[in-house]
Image (cartoon, rainbow, N blue to C red):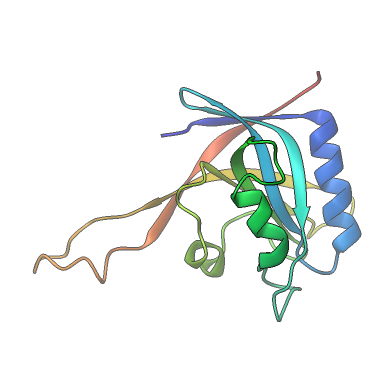
Length: 157
């Protein structure tokens, strides 16, 4: 399980600028980088257009733009280490909708809150499946996506 994430200050600034530029709509995209033991290192951001019907409170990445990224056609075989999206008017906490659309195979999910003018709150999470069973042995009432916070580290080159 991943415990921490590292992002360069210049990349933090780039993603913040992009998210602010897209406000009042949610911005989204992929973070590329590397994994080492229990740590995620993000060093590149690829924005993807949000084509959600209600883009002010949800995101859905444009499939036409997303497919070349997830199939490594446009990333020079770089590893996708995170999904990033913004919450223009909410806290940087996964919403129920965020958890329903979770990509469990991606190591980290980053949320940038812009709910308070002049304050950018970036949080990172690891999503995982909860496989608890109820007393009858069923999983349907308990199999939900859960998350844990990751320690966020912003560093200079």
